[in-house]
Length: 191
Image 1 (cartoon, rainbow, N blue to C red):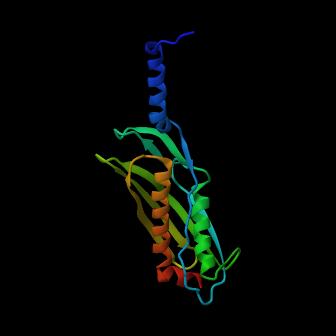
Image 2: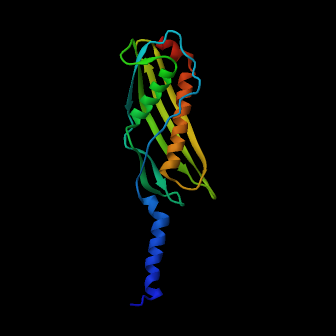
Image 3: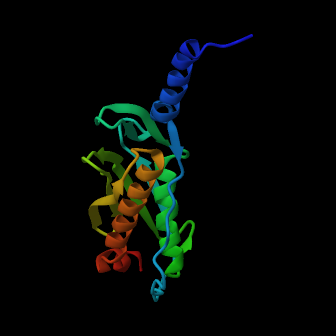
């Protein structure tokens, strides 16, 4: 049986279109990583501390959305686990690296996540993944309360993908925790 090229060309065009644009139509699920501060100073008098994190975002599953080359929103980008787990675990890691034990202790760090999202900024030749992390951190009974609002960026990207959103969010989270742990009042409140 002979297949005519005129009949085959629409199928080839459809397959090529799906391979180029198909990934923008499929949901991405990403795992947010965190790299702790290297050589974090040990805190004298560090005891046991517990950490709780709650996610107050309206849509807790979505951390961004893919965009096509025209900036139109396509498929959602979601986290593989609860965002509150990523944030809590990152704070616990920083506390452990400074000599604190995680568990029931005299103090509890409360974190309320207000924003944890990425947006893609489209350019002519390349774009940027621009993330924002907003959270309120408090230690009940000490008077310590701080609002963290940081931006992260993955510059000069070609694809508005989950991977690029992940990198920008990891950058924003890292900057937020650096800001928190650089605050002497935060560490003093935990002693």
